[in-house]
Image: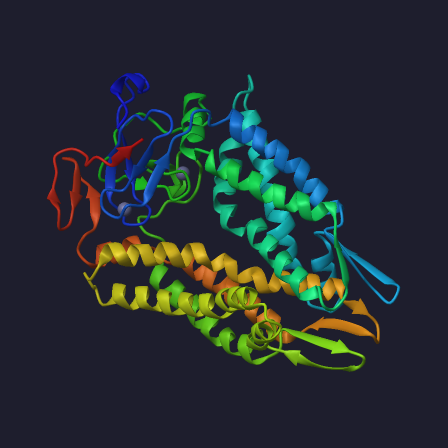
Length: 442
Ligand SMILES: [Zn+2]
Ligand SMILES: [Zn+2]
């Protein structure tokens, strides 16, 4: 804890609900550069920053410039027998589209260009708007949308996909890197830095102070619900919506267990064609054969590139399997009202949620190979139906992880937390007069 002298003047503690375990707890006024973790499951509730507007704004402006350069400059160019091809950010989606795989084209376009562009432009809009004399009224809706878009911007996964594609291409064609690749790497670092210095809670507080939201001054009572998007704990406004970000409020994610099972089952069904059908076919001088995901990893191993083979195997075979098994385990243990290792099960949920996006490496790599290796009868690489099924597994398991509500594990074990007129009531831990405090550390 830092000394009390650094704390903002007389701000009262605010009630938060831990998104991972549902524990209501009071978060005190915080000095810059402090972290608040949940008392019960160690989830990070908030990280404060010295300048939550200026520094992220500068980084997002830099990211915008880099994103434009990355979108138009060539990342790599390949040549063979006098033929020459270049690839930029748009080449992958165009390559898939030419082969009739518009679903994959749309997916790659959205996760590598659409979502990052919206994230960067949206954050610039909010961070410049918040300090204007007349801030736009829609800032809260835009900012709420940006919080929900976060998992779908996959620049970092794309860069790894580019790296694997580059290594695969080396013994096939003559390859040169371009400015786009370096700006992609710089963009990745800038986006990570912008994420690290952001404090969304501080921006919501600024919107409250500037009168852009209608949070009301009443203390949260038994009818209070916590908002999944902005974290506000309060009485819902008309239509059951959050008074701050207008997101629809629920005590728990609606039909979480049934919807997660449905998505998981669909993912299991797609997992079979994803591994049986070829994701790519590589044709050299009219001869060649289609390769499944596993054969793709095997090929890397045979060329002596075992670190890459391990990466592809881990991202494309092990991760989807771990997600399917992990989510199934979380669902069954919740339905059986298990009290076994709740904290560890919450950690499993966080891992399943975090790791899912990395499986997209294979799809991104395929998009580049398909776009670049088109040398007519000499050599060409075509996408296979397995790629569509594999992408479906990745997206369905990501949606399943988003649908699952980890607070249900704690509820089912009799450890639910709720607000009463007297304070916070927690199953297991007993009743408390007044809120339970979260842990803050510098
Ligand atoms: Zn927690
Ligand atoms: Zn909200």
